[in-house]
Length: 421
Ligand code: PMP
Image 1 (cartoon, rainbow, N blue to C red):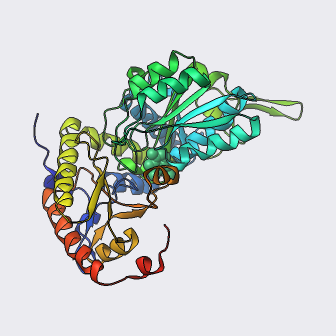
Image 2 (image 1 turned 90 degrees about the vertical axis):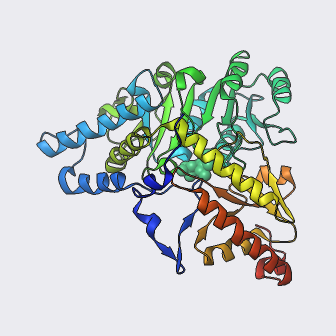
Image 3 (image 1 turned 135 degrees about the vertical axis):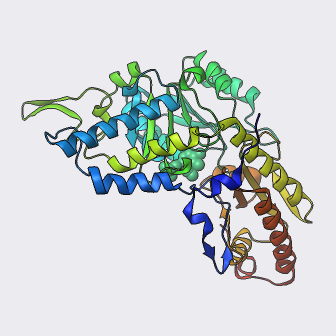
């Protein structure tokens, strides 16, 4: 295994040489969105400069060029997650839209009164609320799987819930955005399949860190966003098993997704177009494929080790600071570090860190049920990407220590107001 040269990679990301509030930017908010390498930014502008045109219906050169680049991007994504067929790759606006698509086009047709959708306590709201809405409509229920004290999915409780409720759908995140915990998705899937459930894996936080093989996982749906994986915003992917996607009715309707329209009735396009109504985010899909090529140009295992090492370094440094509690401190988590500080409001800390050019996130991270479960209203989250360095972690921990002692001596607005997050 080779060590990963983050300093070399940094040169590919123009934004990283910015100054924020007069200080060199230390970007540790990668779980919210990653920065973009020059090749992705260039792919976007190259498309608009040289190929801009609508796809699929054109009979001119530009349209043909846009179509072939757009469809080649689909092939790239299929290869990246080892999908058996590129028609199984549906472009969406992001992970959120992908889950909504499954909820409306699949769950809505499957759930009956009394049925269960199993999720986990650690899910992002995007993997809770769409199920709740469809469950209400169908008089079904959404049940959460609890966690172990270390913040891992409680597999014993999971097995019991599978036996008790025989869920129709199990929808679990591959990696927790709030804790960085990696869920054993192969086991989770196998266990769910043994009671006949359909398995949805939310890969939003995994795709940039783990090597994902949808066939090896064995799940039915896997989804993610481009922007958390060095690609543009506004593009995401839903992968689904071809046989399932073929059976599903369309969700959003309009141009592209039809075969033939008449007032006597409409027939629908084949996969994947049946689920892609309207003009798709063409430049974004092409630029996302560029991001995946960029990621694959590095040794992915070395990147994962690098990110885990940064996290471990940050955990060790933070644990030395009085009053800091690191949540789910397991060493094998992806590069996400969540912690709370006694007597210090996360928002106050985030505001101060920003003055030192350090971008982190504070709050509930769209995981309110998890926060409630952990007994806190929010955490401070530092999340690492391939371009972060040990020197940045060192600086972050030093500044953090300084601000924590400063905050202990002065009541800043959020702590003083007792504001919830
Ligand atoms: N699931 C998880 C685990 C996430 O972290 C996020 C984004 N924070 C989402 C889903 C939703 O992704 P998006 O906002 O890009 O649709």
